Image 1 (cartoon, rainbow, N blue to C red):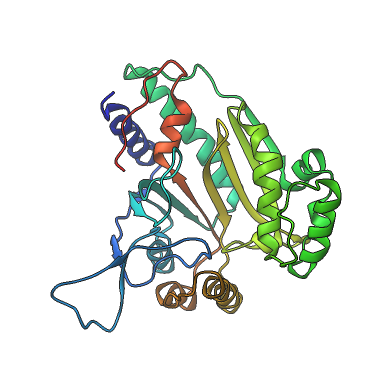
Image 2: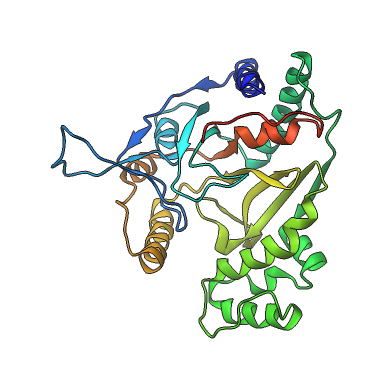
Length: 323
């Protein structure tokens, strides 16, 4: 199969945002401040003409920081559709270069982005169908909180262990309930590693036969760039959606308090240095945007190739993507 299904998917996405009055906002692919997530690794760019440049250059891992700068300048409904680059092993679901769709709503709550996302998925499915591409006839949507999933498939309430200092207790509980889940060693992992071991091995496999699964209300240690719930600070305001068992997108109710954001970034940088022995520059573009002021906002990142693969019917030939 040619790349026509992918090209038509891109066409459908742009039509959706035009219909809904979003502004497309291209951002630089070469940046000085890549994403800071612990396990995310950017490609470094070398220049023949700037060999002694003071600032290192990287391929963008996400347009997020530049888009938040635009939010601080008064733009309200914006999207970006472009290639992003991450240095990671290739697999059926991971490529080092991939199409990322990212959009933001200022003066909005993250559940409005959820409505956008479900509408966008259905719009794209219908558009592909109208253009002669074999897609699934319909998509069933299921919605769960993370705590409900842990209670059902792991046998514990993750919110009872929702403080980063409770990693030892979480480790002991997982070992008691699932003796073969964790490697048998005495080293103490970061809290999120215990969470992900349980989630990836005990919960995610149940999504494989489901069309769309919305996973909401993650524990606070996984807040990253999102806000905490005012009525339950054990929970952060973010959701993920899985399509045919594959993680499709990740949405945050955006954290706009600069001091709290600095502390979280310092923690990410410390873990990256401990695990991978290198550091990245502080995200000054983000800090400048937060200092200037970002209104209450929500944003999401979605993998375009994953969306297409999740929409195609089982009988469809697999498209060829750029590797």
